[in-house]
Length: 495
Image (tube, rainbow, N blue to C red; front, side, top):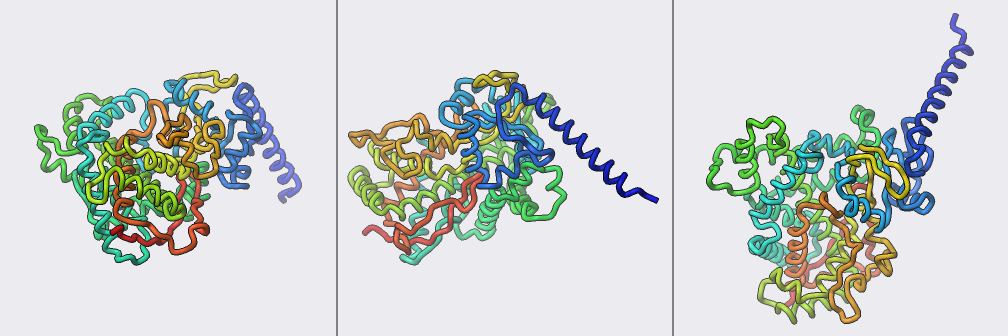
């Protein structure tokens, strides 16, 4: 007969020994690392992070432990870096040490642990250099990309004019416009706003990031080996991206069939040509897996991140009609009502430039930044951080650092305008991160935001359906990405 008391005592003893061993290992591993809240076995600091939401909890803990502290995402220790000064030191001053990509379970599953986002070391350097040069060859950051931007902006004008002053939610249309710019460079195509299949893919992309930024997505990020087998909404975030992945795969197959090495048409062609050149080098990153993952990643960045900024932007414009009025005056003075806006106009339009920068700052679309990993042992702020340790630079604390921004929680154009109403730069403006691993498409995004916002406001007045004071622009989810709320608005033509 089983003695239940003996079994219970044995289980209690086993749990106690496990806890003691965990504590000893934790103390030994953490003896020289940055301080932080005590983690529970398996759960880590999950419960503390959920008390007020992930991002607010990260900010609040910095007030207790300082700008550099340690958290456990599940059993994974991660150094959290907060505030302009500490983030700048990590990403810029010591950029080569904090250069590797850290663990991102969600994206590792999406990208099959490959592609520009996730690679490290020499493979990452080769792939990044190739991607930068190739994107520049197809106009990124150059005058030659201006015409496609202007054409796409006119498509937006036509679409908004066709709404006939009826309330619409421009979210998916702005996402399609954003995706078309990067699609031209990557695969040489443009999608119409009435293309139901493509619009569904973009909506699925938005829905996927909604889940990724929710508690379910955070659970998967902390406990991937467990969550992958459990039912729940997190399962859907992978399914939602499958159609986009199939589009990328199909496009690659089509490019292979008609590839002309002497006349590359876009990024995929260039990558396929490089694959043939490097086919004898087994260590080179130019293979089919990295091609699909890289194009997939760039599509997500081009379609999602830029469109989120545009969506937050139009919400700010209807919330602050007085800002719209001043923008209309500047546009009329510098460009007029008929000539298409040009990137060169940006230097003559300090108010528009400041508005776009402040929209990016307040929208804060990637509040947690993107996780890094140390390439070697390093002493940082007096603490020892071992090689291979995950490091999270929390970008929201840079964009809202009171040492850089006078009223960090408010929409304030003085952050980017001097006393003479001239545009001024601000060191705390890091929506694209910083250093060698900063966003590869930063120059294209800057051009795109300027052309789109300026063209829309040249032709329309954006009007809210409710009192502007009642508009809430707070994100519906805040995790990996800040998700903008859905709002309908009216596009009134400026006659």
